[in-house]
Length: 429
Image (tube, one colour):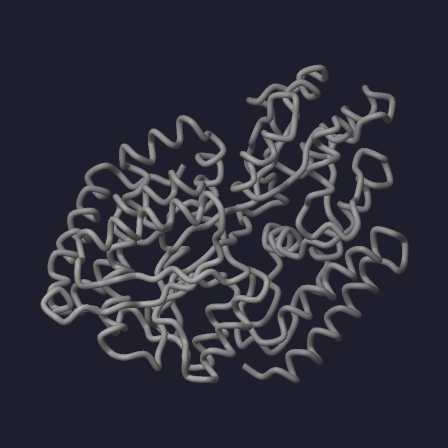
């Protein structure tokens, strides 16, 4: 779990709360009533939880009304871009991490740091876990604030692994251990159970494997692909080796990992990787105890990070921007951020959250959260650059081709790099 030392956490919490109390410099509480639209992707229980937290904000900020507006996850970025082009954006929106940079490049977002007093902006940025502060910063400014994050973890069937003498304390930390354990499960079950399973179409997992192998995806300028290396070839071949030994299964066209979850629930797979926020849905589908372990590494500590940022838009009245900034700062206070984690299972980007009683109570009931929290300081999001969506699709296709014997890892990665360079040239940053 990520924890700041208690004294430091208290200091950060105090600084942020002090900054919140000085938020009167926005003078919003003294202004006329203002309503802001807050676009988000939640329905069902999470919609209810978000509405409850928003109600708390409105109770303590009686002149600000926050109107929750649902947007489908799959089309939210496109809808935001359309609204921006029409100069009718919401004041505030939950933004998938990989889309924030695109909106910044479009001039759609107003930097949060520019809407707060200097001292408050500095305190806010200092309160954020560094890896997440970097993901919320563009052009040297804090543009967005943390909304909620997840990281892929290793789910495992405790009963199956116990039969092979693999206890929770023995869960693989490295790829070599994962290979050995997977082969043991397959061997002991006489081929009726795969030790491990993975998807062909999950670019975020492959990106993390590149990072773990010491491979950067692109040069610093974002103009050239740099994953066509010996380490990248080795990473592809490590997966292929698991298939060759029949210790693992690959599932096709399963970007959401639903098919993997079904295989796991049926007892045909002992281990697989999935988002840390999926633990409750997975546990509800199985009839055996589910364990959660850290994402095994191929070398370096590097993990995938997904989730959402909270952004404020240009081309809305100044009073709405200031109200949105006040909400963003309030949302980032440890007490409120901890409440959202406990409600949603999304991890907070705020350091001091991990010392709150609310988080610690949630952690005891949701140990997978603690596992994912350990990874956050070493986690990074998908590249946020024009053309990357197509490159990510091409990456999974190259991986799929290698796994199914349609070309070697070297030839497929070389072809992928060439395709990526063409896409980057067509989408200059």
